[in-house]
Image 1 (cartoon, rainbow, N blue to C red):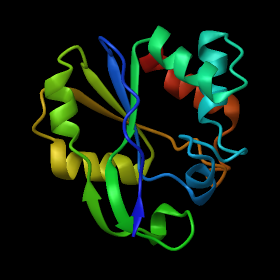
Image 2 (image 1 turned 45 degrees about the horizontal axis):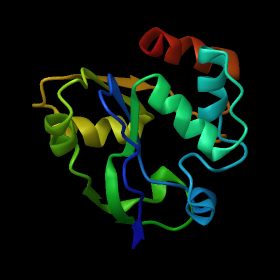
Image 3 (image 1 turned 45 degrees about the vertical axis):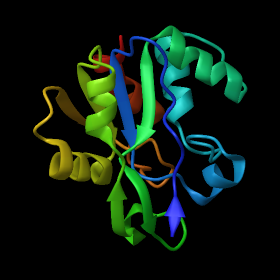
Length: 156
């Protein structure tokens, strides 16, 4: 059983970004999007024109721009890091965080699985749920520029 992280959330988040479940490398580093080839932090760096070279700076960027970060899956069985290998997912309490922070008006899902599970378990929430392309290196069809374009529509 693979377990994820606690959410990163500060006062008055405007949006909640949801991944699926941390990769093996992210778990080893104990950091969201910790795989060196994952483009999540590069996307935010470009959108907000900020240099974020360590995890503390990454979390400060989230706080500054009122972004909460979590995963839709609390725990699941999985071999390796692929979302395609996830079975028996147990969702996090996404409804609870949205109720606790009523300033959250939208949920941005970073990929198909996080979106599918969010819609399955939490479609009745009074927030907009948006599917974005995965920043994973496995999503090679999306360049960094295309990812920035997709994410900036909801983060600027």
